[in-house]
Length: 255
Length: 370
Image 1: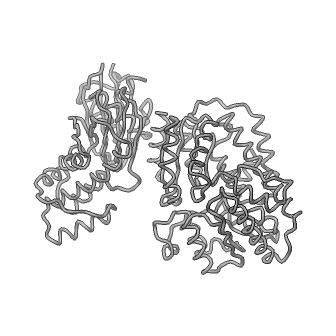
Image 2 (image 1 turned 90 degrees about the vertical axis):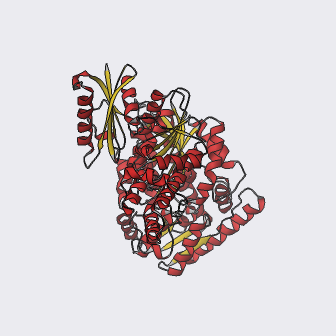
Image 3 (image 1 turned 180 degrees about the vertical axis):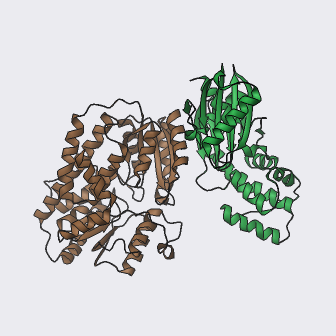
């Protein structure tokens, strides 16, 4: 029996299929304007990738901010629960998760059984989220997936003092005008975002080992900045971005 | 229930409701917190009306109050400056948090309404001298009201007022107790509306309607539901959508520690004592808000007893952003509850805007694991 998880995030939609505790495949697409369409498209794409058809799927759980839009799912669960389940599925030792996505960042504490024990989430503000890094990448004319590599070449990270994304952007523009090195500005951006995320982790007294999930886990510069701020290493799996969808698929298998 | 609908209609358009009060030749005195001694305002023949923000965009208030003040204070000032509170004949500011005191200064200098009073209540409420002082403050407030009303407030007036407010309090307590016994018997949004309506509507009407609501729900059977039992704590929660979101996430509200809830209406005023002293005693003895002090552990102990009495599965702290008294108390209250293995969730919100999507994610997750 095959189970599906669909995670409609603010930036990307992810789908995962599992069978007997084995991950069959995942797929990621941009969410775009319509969360239901994104759900349908990503689901069909993962089915095709794995080579199964809709009738082979026993149950579907949706998650992410667009979870309620996925009307073909059996039930919807929050991304916090799904990330917890997904991380435990990938690595049962994990006790803490730092999930940084497009519009939210979260720190999650798990018990030994992978159940969520506590969590902290950023407020409405975009500080410490993927969106923050995206806005800065635009201002610096750097491709989003290049941000990590750039920042690893920094010799003296710039100091960004504004928490607000809009103010921080104008601070970054002043830095560009002041001819500061792009690598240093980018490292400063990651340190600033990491500081916001670390606050969430400290709030819940996060326990090691900690897994980093969400799209921002693909950014090596952000991982480095976070590890420096937290004082311990983060575990980043191959499916960090799809972790919520994987968790949703696991939860579908328990329905 | 038709009685509840009356509350919904009144709270939907407070200014239209105010016009109805004015049509009865009654003067309206706005109040800003649950420490405002409404019994005296009512006894003077005025209509006490708790002020809430209309949640309009903050434009004019921005010149006076910066963003580090809470959205309630900024919102109410915005309403005043833009003329949305022109139905007011006066306002009463009890001495509570810093922001309300500064609002009082701005308000007084703007001088838009005829009557103005600062009721400078004691901060420490557990001393003998505070009680003497409290009676003095109320005596002075009574005099101010008498001058404004152009008549004496007699002991008979006070006793009648006390009876009226006791009746309101008793029935609200009863409705809350019934909800805790038979969770879900009344929707969170209705509960919110009844309490809010009781703060703004004609108190004679409220005193007539509440016993009917209590009697009606008493007859109802416990609805079939298995929601997690939630106690809400914080300052004001002026959004029925939040109550609905908690219910949609699988919770049921069984009690609160809110300024727009049990903190405002719990307790009775002794009816056979000297009225002013009896009123003073009630305001001294009620559950304190974090801008007041009664003992180092009073609020924590109250939170635990509230959670236990209502068999709460979890406590949701709903704080207005930039409300520093509540923010200061939160870590200690959380610690108190955690020692008793009661799970908590903190939500910080703005009166003007709520991100319900994110709120639902928090509520659903919390309710899932408690």
